[in-house]
Amino acid sequence: MRQDYFSANNIKFIDYKDIEILKKFLNPNGKIMSHKRTGVTAKNQRGLTSAIKHARFLGLLPFVVK
Image (cartoon, rainbow, N blue to C red; front, side, top):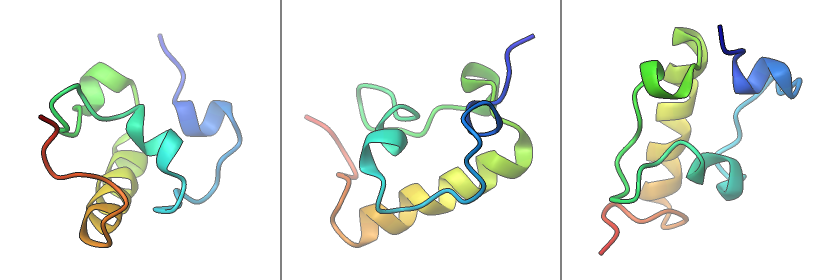
């Protein structure tokens, strides 16, 4: 079984300003990947989703990748 990325790297808070980590959880089209594909726990998936949405709203991440 895969280990959660955030618990493996001892990340307590998912920060919306850390774009490089957030990009790992987006597919090539810019959509958020499901927790089944990424192996992230449900709690961390909710935090990840809100961080990605926050970064998109502030213009740090694109909504759609061409």
